[in-house]
Length: 205
Picture (spheres, rainbow, N blue to C red):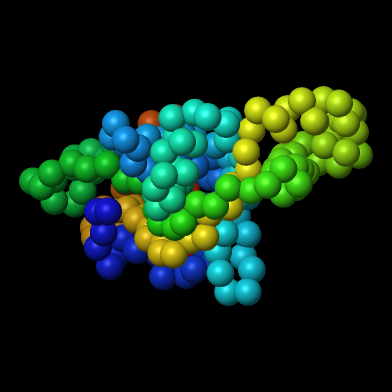
């Protein structure tokens, strides 16, 4: 991935927090006919110093069949991104750019049995739906869950390496960074405001 030391977040826990905030991840691999990919929500688990990603996908899709044959996968977590105009720099005679935040995790995917698939689905449901409501996992009928589980398969990815690029104009002078933040806030769209916020956090660190 595109990476320079000044764009790399050294704090592992901040990287994990980013992954949890942007947990609708893209899982990619190689099948018989080329690359395959799917986007699914994942649960990020830290266990005994090891990082795992859990979720579920539909059975017998191109990506599930590919992951069965080649269990090495790349998982991408993507955050806010936006165009940065060089006119906002103290020295505008250099190229404009794109600021963005992303994490790439490489690992080995293992498919789960039915009992653990149910637990993976429950973990996601408990995280996003919560417990104690009519829609919570524990309130769904056994017949409904039995029917749904037949169509899906749970997975656990054992993460073997992780890289990040938080490209937020760290290579520009402080005056330029402050002006970029101001101009992004003036632009007003959600992506620009999110990038401005992340830049501002790093100015005060």
